[in-house]
Image 1 (cartoon, rainbow, N blue to C red):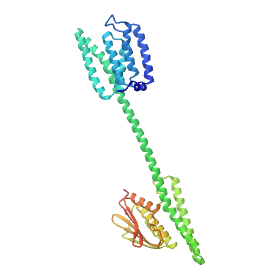
Image 2: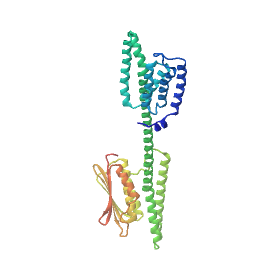
Image 3: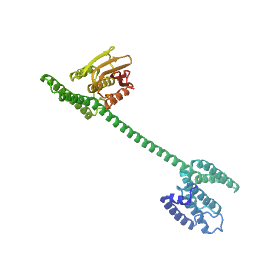
Image 4: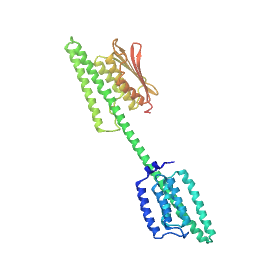
Length: 387
């Protein structure tokens, strides 16, 4: 049970003001004699007691609806004994309404049948007083208006408030979900941008850096070899810049339905030739009858070959690329020899993570690791469609 200190802290200022106003108005009506005299010798001051009790119930109507109903019922019961005052009855209906609106739901279900029995008791008393059928019905109807209608109104308002609160909660949840989806979309877009920038630009820059390092290390190059190497560096720079411009253009366009960069399997031979031009020995083979596969599969397969050959250029001596068209999938295998002093885990950074993410999004798998004295990357990509 709520203690008095806690109860006082929970009293609403609006309820206190309303109780003071109702007490003042009721006192004026009572002072003017607006009440029924069932007991003639009751002092006028006593008739203020029920009014004070029901007004006290208004004060704590939301702080403690149960106690508000108890105190108000004591005042209303006193009225039934000494004489009913209109002001007290009207204020008592607020005590009932407040209990139905703010009180425990289980007790409301118990209160309604009790009040119905009280109304039947009023009807029985009317019959005992010798009233006719019309008088009995009028008494029961008046009792229902005073006792049951506030309960019904409180229940209706409470249900409407609960529905409004539920809708507000749903709206808030929807807003939070939309915000989470927006954040997820932004993160997905950033991840896609990072992956594309790495797969496209970083590979060209890696080739440029390796060629430049080789030129710096060699002092005995003849003019023709030097021109060939510089031409290869320039070609890589131009192609990398073109890819960067294409990505930036697509980002500015903001076309959600367009892939940041589109590459096809028929472009893999060109990629192999570029790697051969910068000094990497590459064998290329296609196994099985070539057929059309989804664009996402082609792009992912191209990126696997591109990243694997870039790593082979960094850490290896030669490479072999094989693309196998199988009934339910496309298998890409890239092997390369590893230099004796090279990093034992070539491609273990963002590039390997990026191509693994691409393949997994399509329901495939990537396995990368040493096989004897060689490094192998094997990607199996389903061709039935995106999962």
